[in-house]
Length: 139
Image 1 (cartoon, one colour):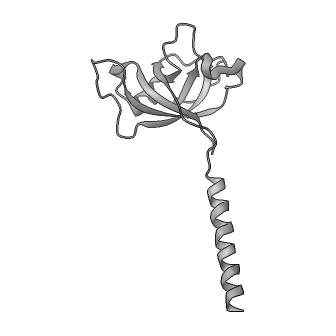
Image 2 (image 1 turned 90 degrees about the horizontal axis):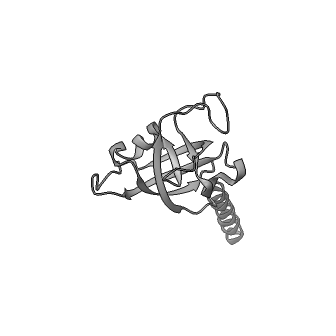
Image 3 (image 1 turned 90 degrees about the vertical axis):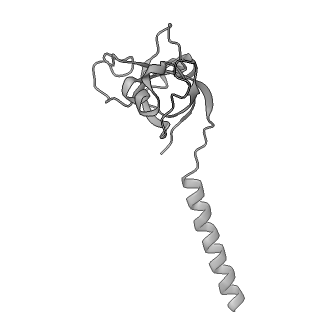
């Protein structure tokens, strides 16, 4: 009887643990790339003149997917600088979550073009371009 109770408790704890693990699982892998920043947010390709705040980004062709990226959230992590002018541009936090609201122009130098505020939250804006990893953010 005691063995059966212990087995039931162990099974219940295992079920709870697996449920918690699966609910926090993020199925998207981090992808390497580069990030730049921009300062004119309206109009945007996704929302026109509707303000979406400042933690936003424009997607390059690598992310855009014919507009399917609109509204998707991405976690962007600063890895390192790309020039010697600012050799260590990443701030301690080094990570930001942004909403895709625009398409990066053809002249875009990064994989993802962050708003100036989003860029400044993870790196020194004087660096201009940084190495990053990014992944789609799932709550």
